Image (tube, rainbow, N blue to C red; front, side, top):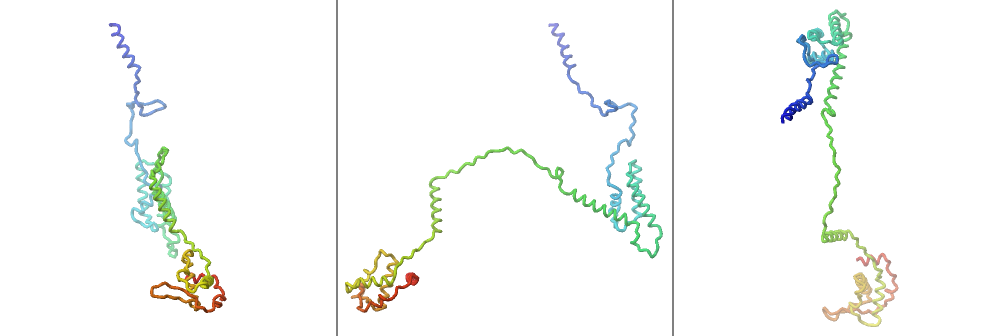
Length: 302
């Protein structure tokens, strides 16, 4: 028991020794060596670190800002006042120990030159607009303003991954099985009935003309009266010929009566009607040419 008790602390110390320990993070690397502690004799000046965000993109941008801030006309720039404000801005940047670009100094020299030329006397007969020292500066300012406005318009447009983000997603392919509707036999029969009714509405009725001649029927009527003196009026009609046959027979009887070849006889009121031949020569009726087919059809239609 004593041996196990003595060996137990030794095992725990070994486990703690093998456990990894996170080292201190260095805040700087000097000549390849990490530095985790500041030197005692290190002096940091108050202005060791300064952050400066440029408000202007060049001397023309600065000049345009000074002109717009005072609501001045670009075509009539007060060179003395603008030059004074421009040089004041240059001096301020130098006091802040900022490294000036060479183009700012070039613009300052250009403004000084224009100011000195404006102070020089000019001939009276010379035109004011002919040799204006500010003309080149005005042209450059107008051109820069056009490009700046165009750049702002382009920058205001929606930009991909800045204003517009394309949504992406993986769509899982799914197999959709469309279930057919359950239709009863009764519904199918009702639908078929409706279709047949609509088909009958658009069906055409074909009329066939039967070749029946009025003159031929007149001859048949006179032939039937040769053996008998009287013949019942209804016996002259054949129901099997249909409506067209009845019409043709009736017209033939009227035609024979008009030519005084037939007579209608009725013994008493509401009694049966009989037809008899008058005995007049029927040669005129038989010798008359038969009506053409067109005339017969017109008569039948009447």
